[in-house]
Image (cartoon, rainbow, N blue to C red; front, side, top):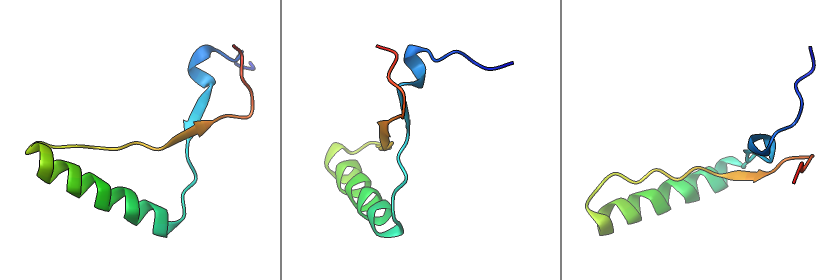
Length: 52
């Protein structure tokens, strides 16, 4: 059974190079230090279809 696209399918996780993943992790560490709390960044990109 094929799944129909929904508004939740608009984005997919970004395909980042190891270097970009490292930069995201460095930014997380910087924000964590500045905010004095856990910060997690999640990278998304627009998927191939856009139902909206």
